[in-house]
Image 1 (cartoon, rainbow, N blue to C red):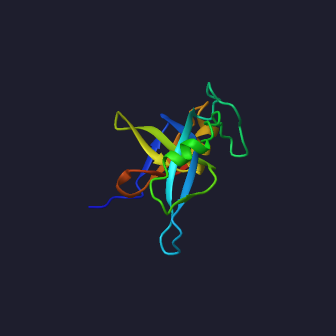
Image 2: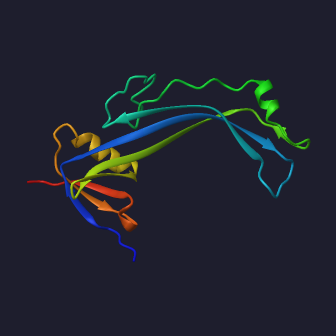
Image 3: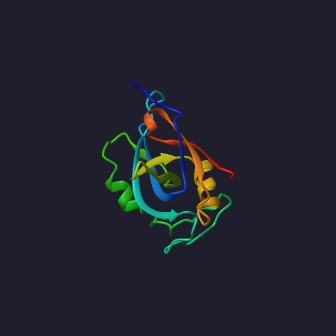
Length: 154
């Protein structure tokens, strides 16, 4: 049975934003029908709790209030060629990709539960975490995600 859109009221919550840089190279196979193969090289990540600048943050906060780690080393030509496994592949230039994943931890019936969430919920938690203002969470399908967070006014 699918359960969704369950409301949960709580004053015991926290949020994380995991920011990640990764160098990625596409190995073009020359086909118009199938995309090239992607290879990830250096990766660095940083976890921010409740919007507080973490140790290891090199930049930030950015326009979304996020902190970022140092850049991973850019792959050199030898590393790129080493992963070129097919004779018909042509490596493209490395591109730096940025990724962010958000999670929320909250109390559900005496147990701490950590589930994925989105940027809007993360920002709502960041704005209310210092005072631990009670929030109403709207959970997604099977209660495996927080879709929305709204402060509860007294």
